[in-house]
Each structure stands twice: as structure tokens, then as C-alpha cells.
Image (cartoon, rainbow, N blue to C red; front, side, top):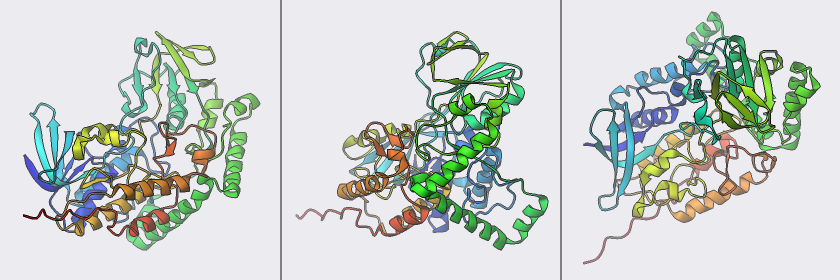
Amino acid sequence: MTRVEVAIVGAGFAGIGMASALRRAGREDFVVLERAASVGGTWRDNTYPGIACDVPSHLYGFAAHPNPSWSGTYARGDEIHAYLERVVDAEGLRDRLRLRTAMQRATWDAALGLWRLRTGRAGSPADEVIADVLVLACGRLTEPSIPRVPGLETFPGPLFHSARWDHSAPLAGARVAVVGTGASAIQIVPELARTAGHVTLFQRTPAWIVPRGGDAYSDADRARFGTTPQALEELRADLYAEGEERFASRSGDSEAAAEAEAVARAHLERQIADPALRAALTPDYAFGCKRVLLSDDFYPAVASDAVSLVRGALTAVEGSTLVASDGSRHHADALVLATGFASTRQPYADLVLGEGGTALAAHWSGGMTAFASTVVAGFPNLFVLNGPNASLGHSSSVLMIEEQAAYVTRVLYGRGGRVLRVDPEAERAYTDEIAKAAASTRWMTGGCRNWYVDDRSGRLTLLWPGTVDAFRARLARADGSEFLPEPAPASR
């Protein structure tokens, strides 16, 4: 049994950011639980060919840990994983990490006013962590979404999700089918087109794609960043400002969206000469409704003889034959599911039991909710990072994590040992505030089905419908009134 003030679950960007914020605030009594064998979260789990971030590298990192050594404008996945390992060492967090330790259950003990976590390590008996405060930093892209396709289990060849890439699979020279045309697929397909015998790409819905651009940083660039911190600070500030400006086109400002859509259409026209293929790759929904993707090599790959585009979803598998919704049949030696994640229904929510034994999943049965995107009514002394309405469609999610970690640290500083119970009315008001801000955005009105909106309620539950500046200001206005006053002691 372990007794701590704060238990953090997850050692990706959110967990490391939270642990770093606690340590810098002088709070040392915490532990970080991570079910995997290393830190890194999504950048540990995703190792598919071509994986890279689509946020500029110098904005996709912690403000306190600038990295002058990024290889280019957009960092590779392995670079980001290595960066997080270095941050752990720089912050001295190794002694707080418990790797290969999964949270199996977290239960609020009302009598003692604390959290009891049952944890488990492979090959070891279950253990218990007792904590005053629980921080869920489990991420939103952790559990692959596997489509329910009749006969999928009959496929005889290598079959895996893009987030569980099988590097032992013999894909060179093979007929490889890829399901999905989202952010992962547009990075994977060009890589497979270079090595596979042929790629068959199943497209349910085309994406708006804009030029990626970006350059490799030279040795001189990296040396300048390393010796001139001000240059790195100025670059980060410029990238931040560019991201904030991008919010308008992503959220639905008519003029900004029209300009951005024109860029996307021109990009498609430049790279796809065949009118029929171009039509197949043109979305029929508003720009910004789904995640806008960045790529310079996806369209050329699809236009090449190495790739065949199927205009339809995968609807059935009959051994090595894949059947599309348009009735076409395709043979494949290997099948890659680039089908995204269970983003709006967080798997950890079933494991967390709050007051009265209510599961967080039950509280979120109509979609995720929280006050300040961080604290949840009915779950005392609980904080959720990178959860309800804490993601972005226009800039770096790390910026949001840092703001949430600062809020948690501030709240803990003023806690004074009392139990923090969120006022349900504060959570409802914040949820209404989000809904009002989201109502006119393209995410809600753009005519598409996206992974930002929970299909159970039709609410925008994943994205923050504003700028990073607005999120920072909103959290700054949280003055503690979001928590119920402690009940007065019973009189004798």
C-alpha cells in the first residue's frame, strides 16, 4: 500500500505536465501510474511509418522545456517520445514513476475523504494506492476504435490498427488495404505506396487537406536555437500567434473559412489531375467540420498507380476478400485499420467510482462534462486533464494541458486539506456556456459527422470552442466558487 497526496494516472504529455507543475510548486507527495513500460502516451504507442506531429514542433512542447534540437518544422513521432523522456529526467520524475502499473479501479472513500486505487502489475498481486487527490491524465487517443465489420475475424493475413503497428508484418511487396482517410492514414499511405506491392484505400469520407510545408532545420538552425534562447522564444511566440489566428477558419468564420477552403481546393487541383479522382477526394461538408489535415504527399500517392481509392466503407470481410459499401470486392494480403479512437467515450471512466458509487461513465452517459474542463460534480478531489472540451482544432493541445495543470496546482494550493466538491450547478452552467459558444461553429453546423461531437447527446464534448487565450482567461476567472462549502460540523 502507498499513501500520497496526489495520484496521477497516465504518463503522456498530460501526466508529465501535471507532475512537473506539482514539483515546481513545491508539492513532492505524488506518484505517476503508467500502465505501459515507458512514458510517452500516444507518441509511445503510435509507431506507424511516417508518423509525425501536424503541429509545429516548437509549439508542441512544454514552455519550460524548449527543445532546440527538433529536426524540422514538424517533429517525428520518435523525436517527441524521446523529448518526453528527457523532460522526465530534467524534472527529476523518475522516482515518482510506476511503470507497468495499471489503474484497475479508483473508488472514493466518503468516510475518510480520499481515493482508493487498486493497481496491478503484470505477474504481481494487486496493490493499493491511497491518495487525497486523483488526477486522470489518461489521454483521449488511447483505445483504438475497431469497426464492427462482419467477417473481420476471418481475414487470414496480418490485421492491426494503426496505433498498434505490427512491424513484423511482411508488407513489402504485399497487397495492403488501409481503412480510413484521417490523420493517421494520410501519413501511412504515402509510406506504404513506396514499399507495398499495391495499396487499396477505403475512404468513407474525404478530408479537407491543406499543404503541410515546413522544412528540415539545419545544424546551424539548431545551434542558433541552442545558443540563443531568445530566438526560440520569438519563434514559439510567432507560432502561437499563427495558431490563434487559425481558430477563425477552423471554427467557421465565413471569410476566414472561405480563404482556407480555397487553399485546400487549390492544393487538391494542383496535385490531382484526374477530374473523377479529384471529385472523389472533395468533401461535401463545410471546411473545418472535421479535422483539417496537412499533407504534401498524400494526394500524389493516391494519384499514382501504387494506390487504388475505394469510394466506400469496408462493409464485409470474406477471408482475404474485402467488400466495400459500393459492392466492389478487393483482395488483400494485409489489412491496416486507420479508424481512429474511442475519443468521446473514455475507457477509464468505467473504472472511476465517485460519491454513492456512481461511475464516471454513468455521469458522462450523455457526453463528457466538467467545470473548467477539469473538475467533475460528484467526484470530489478529482481532476481530469485533456478530457471534456480541453482539446483544440487549431493549435497545440500541450498549451491546454499546461493551463489545466496550472489550474489544478492553484486549486490544491488553496485547498487547505478540505474536500473539494464541485457544485453541480457550476458544472451545468459551464456545459451550457460551452454549448452556446459551440452552437454556430462548423463542428456543429458543417454537415459532417466528426469525432468532436458525442453522438449520444449531439454536444461538442471534445473541443474547446475558443482560442487558447480564451481558455486561459476562463480558468483565471475560476475563483473557487465552483466548489461547494464544507458542511458545518454536526452539533452535539
